[in-house]
Amino acid sequence: MIDLLICYDVATSTEGGAKRLRRVAKACTAHGQRVQNSVFEVSVTDVQLLHLRQRLLEVMDADEDTIRIYRLRQPREKFVEAYGKDHYTDFSEPLIL
Amino acid sequence: MIDLLICYDVATSTEGGAKRLRRVAKACTAHGQRVQNSVFEVSVTDVQLLHLRQRLLEVMDADEDTIRIYRLRQPREKFVEAYGKDHYTDFSEPLIL
Image (cartoon, rainbow over all chains, first blue to last red):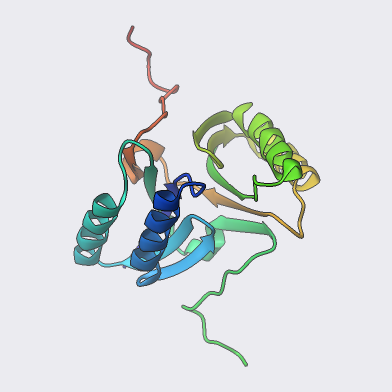
């Protein structure tokens, strides 16, 4: 699996922008999770990456928005620090309830 | 040098949030560049990282904001894809004018 960070820059002050963000979020969270309002960590196969990239390019407004896709170092959790109110759950670890 | 991606999640709809984002941007762009409204790519030494992290933690409102710091794979440009309106300039490459 390929670990990716997807950063989507969009003006959510417009109705169209908010709608595009919802669509991007839907496409990304199918393969991972939303770690910030417009930042997503996903794990995909090569084929899933092709489809996801195509979907993101369909949804975005290239004149208004920016998408940046970073290939993350693995294991991901070793290379990230998080501060503040955080919603991250590591679903690849066993859940202890 | 350590290549980092700094993602700052802040509600800029409040005056305080917009001000914090300006301060975070100032601290980050001292070591790199703003690639999206609240996403920064920076290159720092170990010592600079200590100071930058401390500055970010001072500026942020931990009850409202989120900061995520990713260590990027190097060479950075090999592991990032960018789409849409983009403001990135690779200052580590020779500038051809």
